Amino acid sequence: MKKIYLDYAATTPVDPRVVKAMLPYFSQKFGNTMSLHQFGREQAEVVEKSRKIIADFIGAKNPEEIIFTSSATESNNLALKGLAFANRFKKKNHLIVSRIEHDCVLESSHWLKSQGFEIDYLSVDRDGFVDLSELKKLIKKNTLLVSVIHGNNEIGTMQDIEAIGKICQEKNVYFHTDASQSYGKIEIDVNKMNIDLLTASSHKVYGPKGVGILYVKKGVLIEPILHGGGHENKLRSSTVNVPGIVGFAKATEILKKEGKKENKKLSKMRDYLINKLRKSIKKTRLNGHPIKRLSNNINMSFFGAEGESLVLELDSQGVMVSTGSACSSKTLVPSHVLLAIGLKPQEAHGSLRISLGRFTKKTDINYAIKQIINTVKKIRKISIFSYE
Amino acid sequence: MSNTFYTEETIEHFRHPHNFGEIKSPDGYGEAGNIICGDIMSLYLKIRESKNKEIISDVKFRTYGCAAAIATSSVVTDLVKGKTIEEALKISKNNIVKTLKGLPPIKIHCSILAIDALSEALFQYLKKHKRKIPPELKKKHEHVEKEKKSIDERYRHWQLRK
Image (cartoon, rainbow over all chains, first blue to last red; front, side):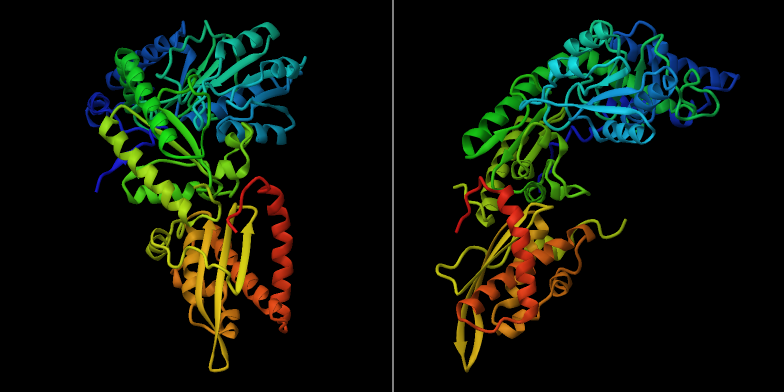
């Protein structure tokens, strides 16, 4: 049985070159970065080297602006809560987040609301772009932060980050972006784009799980969430995950060298897949912007077919993808992203997210296309809704 | 974290559902939907008299929904086929869950949906023939009607295959 993984937006396999770079840091070079002796110093050095590689990759001027964390979830929590609590006595208690953020941003904002902060949610249009004029209107005297996801994890839409950054700059509010999906997919320059805080994650770019970063521009003050030994410039205590960080840096070096070519290849395969499915299956909808989208993301609704059924049937055929259907979630509510772009619940229920990656071959795509066509046909045959 | 995924039996029924399709001019037709999850199911009954008993001689379904909704639909058709009306009225969601050797807790409502569709089909048949409707069936019908109203609003733009 074939096994075709098309869920790279969920996570990626670790690149063998990354594994090779990490291996010495488990048993041979294992010291604690806080130790004064040579084993400790050796670790601190390699962490600083890694910090520089990642800082350079996003155009950060000072490596100290990079804080290593355990995940994008932690980075996003630290960005919102850390900034909010550092400013809570300065009469800046209003945050604006988009309606299509990842759950970790939304849930953090809900929690901050419960702690007395004021939150506004920024709408998006049918393609998933935030409304810039609404953003300008929402910014008030007491606005502290605007947080907008760069490349959306579900529908793939890439925001015009520079335009949002410019508005935030002019209005003198901080700007955070969750770049977990876009890191390595498009060039990021935190200074050019007026980004004050940025989140990225290692396991989305062929690095290991358990490592993320939060970029915090020099001069932007945040409160730590984890208190302890004072690691990461006292902003994130915890024994430093050296092999993970080395892996993230190596994954970043590969992106720097090969990313451009890889993204070109991915977007070509992406468009091929979208066109084939649209031609072969009636009553479909491409979710997200057709061009301004992540190079590897496809999100389509197939009317009359429910997403969880599609995913499970495709899984039986060896094709692994994901869905925004309510039935696949723990809450039985369809994806908030699909609802935010104006999809009716029944359209959101019938969505599939197909995400390609470094190891996807053209033959895999052709096999997947064939299986998706058959599966939609099969599920629609059982369905009460007729779309033949 | 136990029981969060489907049993082999559920996957088997989902992938190879029994009795899907429709019956032209059915003796009983029922429709039920769960607004929260977005599952909608329809059930068709053919009823024949044999030795003074009314037997469900054929049954078909069409379902829009997740794997659990399709599997529970398939099971309920198996359970009622060949049964008398009295026997069919006694089938409960527990019979369905048992046949599937369990469902994830969050999917139990799918088995209720299947029972609702069956009850609706039986209700319609009894009503059509001006028969006495058991109070419990009447109560179920009223509940389903109420739920359906909200679904109609939500799925207004959809073309039902009736």
